[in-house]
Length: 366
Image (cartoon, rainbow, N blue to C red):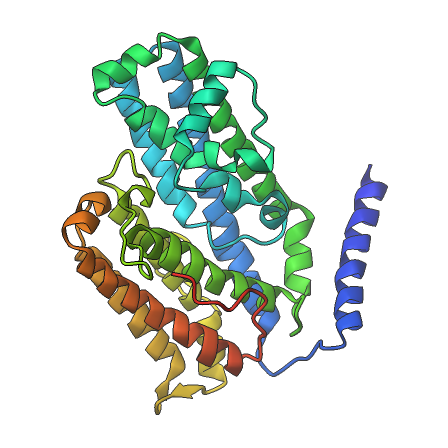
C-alpha cells in the first residue's frame, strides 16, 4: 500500500512536470512563489476547509436530530447550523482547485436558484442520484434552505411536513453529500495534493499560482458579481429576478453571505491567515515586490482600496436582498459597479503584471 501511494505521488509530480514542459512556458522570476503557495495551502486553504468540514459535521448532527424529532427547538438549531456552514462555504468557495475541481464542488454545493419542483419530485419518487449533473440544482445549501425555511409558509406547517419521513431522508441525504464532498477535498489537501500544489511553483498555464489566481478572479467575477448581484437585478435586461438571490427562502441572510464572500477574497489577496490577523506572502506581496503601479500608485494598495469600498457598499445594503431589489434596484446597480471595478483591475492590471494568462471566458456576463 505504501509502495502504491509513493508511485501515485511520483506519477502526479511527473504529470505536472511533463505538462509544464510540454507547454514550454514554465518561467520564473525573483519572487518566491513556493513560499506563497505554502502560505496559501498551510495557513489559508487547509484551515478554511477544516472549518468548513467541522461546520458540516455539526450540521449533519442537527439535521438528523430534527429529522428524528421535528420540533421547533430542533428546527431552530438546524437553521443555525445551516447558516454557520453556509458562511463557512463562502470562505472556501474560491478554492476550486485539485479535488474540488474534479468533484465540481461549487456546482454541487451552491447552485441557485433551486429547482424546488425537482426537489419535491425527488422526495415523492424516493429515487434519485445526487451525484448526477442533472441534480446540481436540487441539492446543496439551496436545497437545505428550501427544506428548512421554505417548504411551507409557517414553522408549524414546516414541522407538519416532516410527518412524511421522506422529507427527513432527503434532508439528511443532501447533508451527507455535502459533508462527504467537503471531507474528500480536505483529505486530498492533507494527503498528496499539498505537496504537488506547492512544488508546482513556476509560471505557466498549468502552474499552481496561475491556476489558483485565475480561480480567484473567476469566483469574484462570476460567483460574486454575477450570481449574487448581476442576475438577481437583471443587470442587462433591466428586469429584476429577485427570486434568484442566494438564500432565497431564508431571505434575510443574503447580505451576510455576500459580505463574507467578498471578505474571503480580500483576505486571500492579502495573504491573511485563516481566523487570524497575520498576513503571509500573497498576491499583494507579489505585486509589491515587483513594484507594480497603477496611475502612479501601488497596484496592491489600489486593489485593496477597491475591495474595501465594495465591502463598505455591501454593508450599506439591507439584510433582505429579495425585498430591497424589488424596492430599490438602483442600490444594487451601484453595488455591481463597485464589484466590477475590482474585477477590472484584477483581470487587466494584476494578471498582466504577473504574466498570468486568463484561462476562462472573458465575456462580461452580468
